[in-house]
Length: 306
Image 1: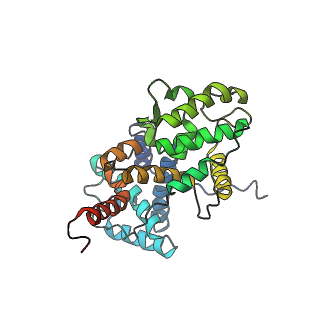
Image 2 (image 1 turned 180 degrees about the vertical axis):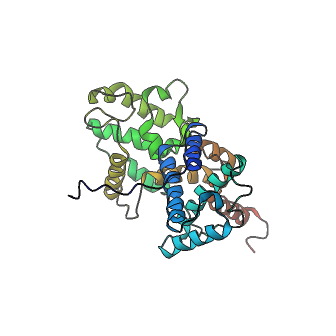
Image 3 (image 1 turned 90 degrees about the vertical axis):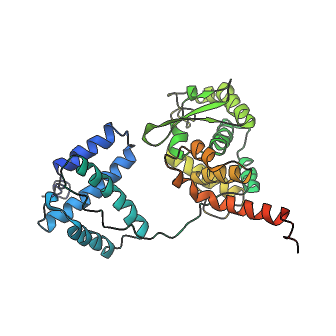
């Protein structure tokens, strides 16, 4: 039998897991990427139980500890292990609610300690240099300026950027409709400069691409830009701007949040603009507020200059 004809062993499944994945897809509106991660993590657990001749129905904290020990032995780092545990905990919570488990088998497990990693963001000068790189004598350059301006003006994820459609932008109000994780909708106001650039692109430049879809940003064939396409453009313009650090589309999102907080915006407002469901996700930017408070204290406290 040739390699192509060989049938790979089927992955273990379980009706509980199937029901849970159906729930997070249909009722919670989880994105395809998140669903794939959940499925992969739960299938990994099922494979372990199958290899050890354990049943999911009999899972307890001891067996779960053995499983996590095996993951660490395979080289899974703390951050990946924490994400894996998050997937399992979501399933366990659902399983307890459905009365499949009497109690949560993972309730005694602690998350691995993660090193605090501050987000990589661009300075205002770097942003300014970056936005000057596209050649606006070409339709591609005009598209790229509009795309980069919007990425920074609205703090978008790259998945959100490539999903935006023409009708999601209201030029009268300057409001952009964004569909984030789990298809959750949020309305983001963008500043006047970005409004002007985006309106000009939509009216004068986008038609030159001979659109084959209603996505805002198009490739040479008139179809929607891909995630990889945006990444390549970011890398290209970062090099042209003389930025040596590793920059990604997400760096613009971090810069958006950081510069808002530097300007005096409160954390709750930034949370809403970023589309974070939980403010704990936004708190990673509190180092900016701490620096600002120290600066104000040093400047205005009557004893600071003594």
